[in-house]
Length: 97
Image (cartoon, rainbow, N blue to C red; front, side, top):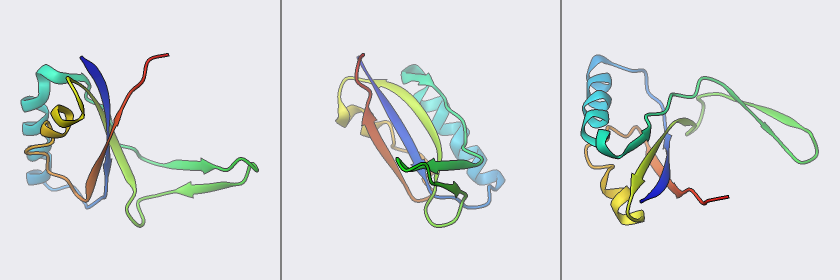
């Protein structure tokens, strides 16, 4: 099995329905879950010149992550079925060091 990072994008104020949708999705993918992840609260982007930019929920922010096991990229994408996405989810295969 390979590991994949799911980066969740987009934000809207959580409702009980959205929360229930996320919990149902986490239960569904539980056999594949390495790290359920957490929502992002605040962030900062640092450029190579040392300049920094505060990151918030404006625009289409990265709002959380999940790490899963899957055979390949297609199998990782299939795990998104039922995910109550706000905007989109990026999938990255995690390499080995």
